[in-house]
Amino acid sequence: MNILVTGAKGNLGNAVVKTFLEKNSKVFACISPRDQSLEIKDSNLSVFPLDLNDTGACLTFTKFIVEKHLKIDVAVLTVGGFMTGNIEDVSIADFEKMIALNFYTAFNLVQPLLKQMKLQQTGGRIILIGSGPGRDIGKARGSVAYAFSKSLVFRLAELINAEGKENNIFAHVIVPTTIDTPQNRAAMPNADFSKWQTAESIANEIADLCF
Image (cartoon, rainbow, N blue to C red; front, side, top):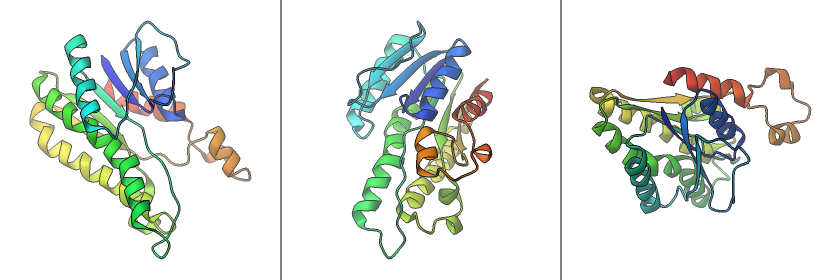
């Protein structure tokens, strides 16, 4: 299978890349233009710097992959970010930052990917990363802009499924609990790490949806 992964230098994205490579998939890993390379080396891995907020660049990238490799079976879009702030404190700029990071970075690839997958006899899978506050507004206190932006991810998945089901195209939203990363351990040193999910376990869940 041909797999596209965004946020490949992040903890989850990196685990997803490794998991699909272990399953002998061909992986197209997107990293930030600020990054120079990916530490993983594999003959089935191709790495591309890509600005996911650049609509034109995302379209050009998708066309390039299809022209060279004919199809994209799965897209795992892991890029995102978090911000605190309640209703009284949040600003329009906060909303714009979170929507750009958590929604546009997905939508700018979903748009050309959906068009391409409709042309493929096998359809395709699009995996998005949600969050508890984005799914349940009751959990959004203290992270309003973040929760709002993540709620758009769920709506996007619903639209993909409504539009793509006749072409065997399906979107799935993964909702992790706290992910066990060095950054989260540093931020919450007194937490019970045993209750957290590993990036590898989430990557395996994603792979299970695709095989």
